[in-house]
Length: 193
Image (cartoon, rainbow, N blue to C red; front, side, top):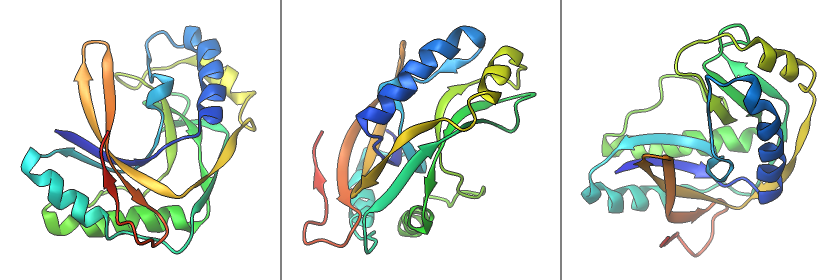
């Protein structure tokens, strides 16, 4: 199983991103564009895990809580590492410190299970496209330069999810395996698809 922990993105934000991606896709034919239904806020990429580890992972995630729901907005566009030789084309995320605290709590909860902490700093973003290798995309970069201040909406997240990524010939498909409340609540998490 290939697992990751993430927040869902509201349908209104996905719709706005899908419209933009349809316009920009022809400007970067070398890129692998993410399907709009797969756009999410990654909190922790776990990677390959045996099925027997699913229950301990769910139990650990059920202990992760914050005191309030997360308020998130989705402004701007950019590239990692930069627009001259991009590897990733992304939409921005702006949130208070609660989002980074949630990601850090998830890291801490999973580490005792042998799931290593990320070596890079947490930089929340929505991946829109990936380039197989750093590849100049001057037309895309030019279009994005004129859209850097675009806003895609906002949301309030009261839960996070454990997903399985299933690799298929047409691209990855994500299945939600479990849901966990962000604020402390009596319900410690529910499983199901």
